Image 1: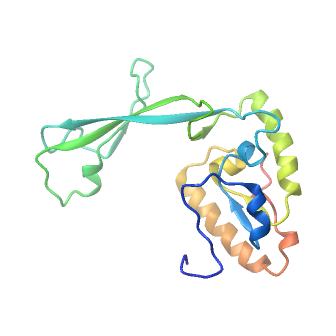
Image 2 (image 1 turned 30 degrees about the horizontal axis):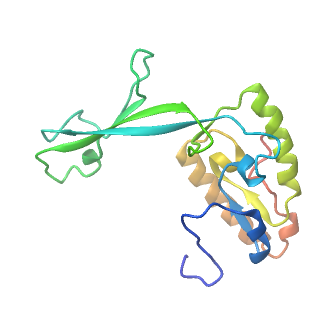
Length: 181
């Protein structure tokens, strides 16, 4: 797909909506408020960061990911990627503790918070988003919804199929994948 001359991929660049005129259509998966330059303020997000450790042994926890839901545990998950390739043998292993925190302006947002103040801002951003021509806002950040990854993939595949069907009439194609606000 990326070999197509109709697709342009730009990496490690902050998106700038002034680029829109360079493309026939844009699928934007970044933060909805960032697309509009935080015109009405920042939507609330949580972000994550990791701390890694080397375990002197092949198995630290017996599973690739274990969630920790207790308020007494400071991290939310431990990841041990060696379990994703169980056919490999290791004398030691790296595991990662995942921590959640409030998002600062320089952080990468991960999880929309959707508190009452956020929902008020979201309504304003969605109004502007729906007026954008030839732009669809997709994924967790673009639609400001918490989505599990299998839902993101499924919704993206559905959106791609609908886009192909509508590609001759882009003006009718919706800016947001579904009508949920």
